[in-house]
Length: 380
Image 1 (cartoon, rainbow, N blue to C red):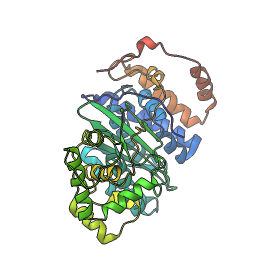
Image 2: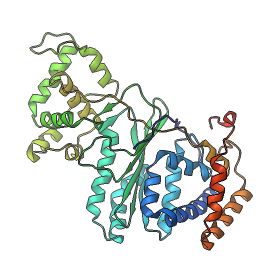
Image 3: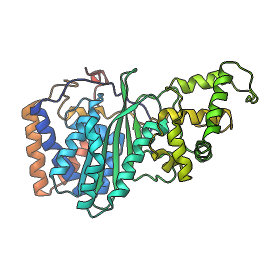
């Protein structure tokens, strides 16, 4: 079940100093090792796919509590730590150009674990298409990280950017059923929009089926789109939907970007006779503008509507974990090198000894502690 609530992820610039990044990697490696020993590799992936746990881990290692960098830096640190350790979990992808290396890296990881690389490469492509095309709220993906364990469990953490609003949105996935694309995320962290074109919401099977069917009609769907545009301009047309503000609906779609059909992609669809929504999304050329156009036609011509519910999820952020070592930008206080090193040494010895009772005792104490709300301020 996805958690509910809202958290901001404003876009931040800057970088993590080398002295802090080095310590982050050491601490992350120890914590990840302890987690796998306690919960197994699947348990670790379940936690990475939880936006609350992920943010808490980010705060623990010293990253900002409210920054878009909490995704890119933290996943990068985890990738380096896990790929160096033999813990049964590896990571592919990353930010920008590194995200384009994901298929090649997944292939290497899957072969190491004796798994079918094609299956996981397809999963990676599809979840990226969902968050860039099937779910639209003004965010463009620029970060994609794929986690895979030796048992075949997978998780994805990816992030999109809304340049206009200067905000980021983080999408989490875990072992999702990709045959039926209905509420497939394990969580989404960000600011909830007034509306989002959500074609993977619950009860969207009829809409998905309709979009696939009309996409295969070639010239007819192109004529339908022109009919809708004529209606918006006030021209008399043969068909006009009842009790609908055509212009208002059109402007809602247009606020998300252009409405243009990719004729080559639609022609390719007809040749393949595609029936399911997942395969449809994976076709090259089926991008945000084409899906917007098809959705508009489905709504105004065929009276089959998409969901406009923004599926952002997130409970109150775990700011308290920033008190473990502080934050890179000095919120709630600056990171002390000596304290960081002491914690690394302590957890390292604890990991070697196998004594976990002390950690559980600390957990019982920390669970009752509440941070001063006045110290929860934005970082810059």
